[in-house]
Length: 165
Image (cartoon, helix red, strand yellow):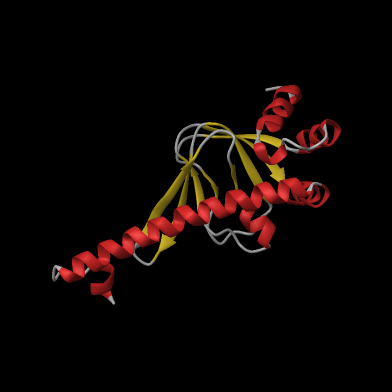
């Protein structure tokens, strides 16, 4: 994929749609195209955050480590970004990201990514919207899981994780 193709790809991503072309070309130039085979890990929960990844091709599973073992909480695909939350919050990675299929990404290092966020408030707003949407999905999953736990307890069945405590 050429720099021009990567630029065109970034331009179609809502996060980057309002960036002036010269700045977006610079971001493209500072980014690195990285491919992963299926089941390869991009980063692990707890790792230091050094980059965000724009998915160009393929899918990636978002996996959190729980006391009961790993749990896939989402699958992301083309034109979606992973790894931005830890960069924005300056915290360790909150999840493991693993290629579900062959995965091609554009790796955007922390410093250029943060520079774009500072220079273009629209990016920050887009990221906040995306994070709010992900939080809403997580809340819905949590509500559903808690409802299932209550249903099991009402039926006299102790959920496995509670029985281990």
